[in-house]
Amino acid sequence: MRFVSTRGGMEPASFSDVLIEGLAPDGGLTVPETLPRFTAAELEAMRELSYPELAAKVIGVYWDDIAPEELLRLTTAAYGDQFEVQNAVRYTPLTPDFALLGLSEGPTLAFKDMAMQFLGEAIPYVLRQRARKLNLIGATSGDTGSAAEYAFRSKPGVNVFMLSPKGRMSDFQRAQMYSLTDENIHNLVVDGVFDDCQTLMKQLNGDLAYKASRSLGVVNSINFGRLAAQSVYYFWAWLRATDGLPEADRAGNQISVTVPSGNFGNLYSGFIAKRLGVPINRLIVATNENNVLDEFFRTGVYKPRSGAETFITSSPSMDISKASNLERFIYDLLADPTALRELFTALDQTGSVDLSEHLERFKSEFGISSGSSTHADRVQQISRCFAEYGVIIDPHTADGVKVAEEQRTPGEIMLVLETAKPQKFADTVTEALGKPAELTEAMQEMLLLPQRTTEIPADSAVLRNYIDTHTGIDS
Ligand SMILES: *Cc1c(COP(=O)(O)O)cnc(C)c1O
Image (cartoon, rainbow, N blue to C red; front, side):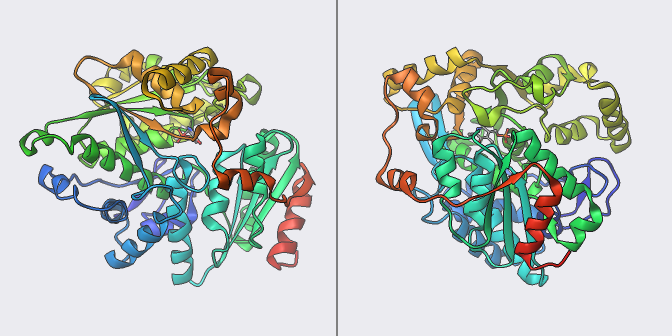
């Protein structure tokens, strides 16, 4: 399969290329040139597969420059016993037509592990083939950095330099990241806020000569490899939701999925699965008070916010000012890279774009709708889900449950993606239930481990110097 840029300025590349390059060189995002479609019989034949087998089958659609048995070896390592449950994903029916799909059984207790554990196998594999090394640099306010560090810890050929804002993360998130002692993991605590971390990362990545000479790479949510890995659990979701049906009824049985959303990577992965043939009726975007995406899907106007206009909420992994992956959806909508390039130039100049003339197609053609929640909604859903179903959900999942409840129609089979464990967000859970979710023994031990970080000022010269010292490169 060949990959091209949403902005039309990239030579077609393979999945292996896209995995280690990340961004397209023209500033666009990489997308598959075309997608095949599985038939109902092919989907049915996936029912007996284990999660690693299913992942190899689905990811194999995109990754055709690898031997199938090699890919299966990678997915088997990626979705092994570092997950709390066999087959990586926990499917929890709450009522006959309402279920949670648990995606936070991995080492960092958030859904980012579903993609990152795969990249942690796939990227070192490609690097080894090409006799290359990669220095990954990232900026995190919590979940992404942690998932990347656990995926690449002690992996050959890879160093991780992760920038996090001083004093802005929860105790749990800090303990999870900063207690890692692997030599290739560098936790750089920046004297500043998340935006300062991101600016530093962009300064280094924008310096193309520096980037090339230091083999810098990024693993943010725009890497198509992450979307490929995330599309797998939508297949799994449909298979599990239809397991109990008579065989003749399965193919015609569609599911709807509500997705707690920030950068739109998770939902877009579902959209790809739908195009690959998974019987998905609706995909529903759930946002918190940072409702850039909800606004877009309701009005057709995309208006990214500034850092100062971004709220700090109780579902912090969804606190985004712009939704990077939306560019891929707009590419599908317009089917015209030149028009897209002009649109994004206009966006830079005026701060918003208006696609309301296509609004009708969002629902009818793409099956996407949206909603949003407030802090009070999340608290209420956490306590209701505990009272009614006996399950404790985290605030991000609560965003999803709130929007799903609001949007469900009679007879619709609705799944909500559970994107984090409640232990990670103890304050809001305590507000809802009067007590936090119980910590496992492993979690308690982790909180007590010594932490190892390097503090740096928000100064790119200091960061460059640190990277050069720790990669053995003389500047
Ligand atoms: C990253 C994240 C999200 C948002 O996912 P996107 O792919 O950015 O839309 C939601 N919930 C949690 C817990 C996350 O870590």
